[in-house]
Image (cartoon, rainbow, N blue to C red; front, side, top):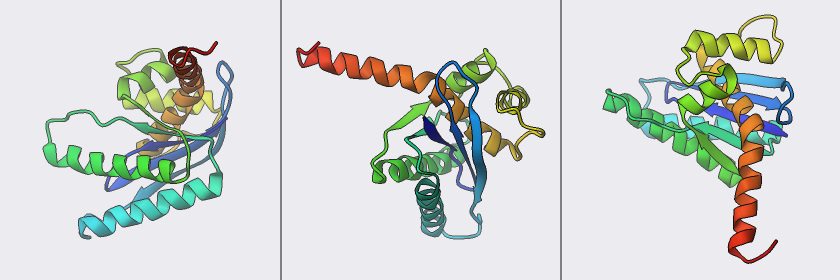
Length: 174
């Protein structure tokens, strides 16, 4: 399964692409950080993010997209920008006809480190180890995006199978 992971952010948006199957190490395909200029107007920043994510989806042809779920922060301005970037990421996946799954930061941390309380350094160290990289992906936004993609490979397949089984049960099928 090829997954494009997105760590949404308005100034820096991490994007990571991995391939793998549940229970096995994933393989790094690529990672990026999409930057927007804080001096630009919001519509231009969102448009740049949309075009960049659309291009990356077209280039890497993922089977699904994993996006970090926005959580409440103390700084409302920061959470608004992150939420807007998250919406653009979800839209890029949906526009391509791909399944899109969101994960909380603690779900991602638990998937890659074993602890939902892990810090950024621990996540980066585990992503580096799990993908067998010579150096940690930088900046941290890229490592977080790769962690999202790994989380989806390992957890998303199971989630999708459970959802499909529940859907069949609702329809009265076996």
